[in-house]
Image (cartoon, rainbow, N blue to C red):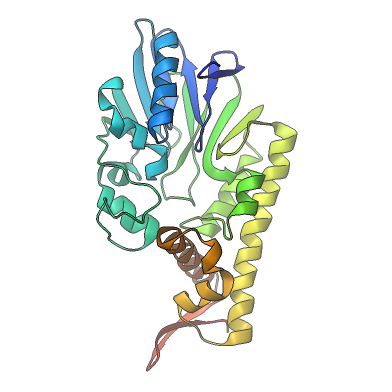
Length: 295
């Protein structure tokens, strides 16, 4: 069974969660989000062996989450260059910053209950959203992280990273994780205006445009439901701590352990932050500590 599948032209897919896309031109093999795990490293090794020739191998990291970059840390010598966005590069290089931003707690990188762990990854070049990486175009997709980028190949294939989740991911997890859900909504709306023929989410199947637009709408509705649920919870229950809001929206037994629960709690904090900016909720500090209410 081949380690990679051709999507279109010179654009290939290496399956996984997250998936990786590979683009090949005369100068380089570009690997977008190498991913994580020993199995993924083996698949990438086979892919590079088949496609490399005398080309350079360039890793493009769309955002700082460990599951998208751990494979680089496992075999850094494989990559001639590692590229990340200027906003997310510090999280790629510093695992403690990465963990703090992702989970809300400055835990050591080797904490056993975190779902993904990765040592530092050195970034050799930072880019601004919209910059080109050889033949690849980048698109700023903020929300999931501040500096997340998407990558568009000359074959019309858009790697949307974690701006878009596949339908099974939306069904499986209780809340769609975004550090800033309101920015994520703006990103999802903007993706409809970008010209692409096929979309590859980080976690989900390849989709042609019609199916992808339907999935984008499902992501939009999932975030809107979450925003409305937080407001409704505060209206009906009164002032609550962020942890109490999380407990009312999330079943701990389905969370998948303390690390994943922290991720969901950080999601709720992101919701409260963007709802505050929109004036739909506000913080209050009194004898009960920091609470949130819907005016």
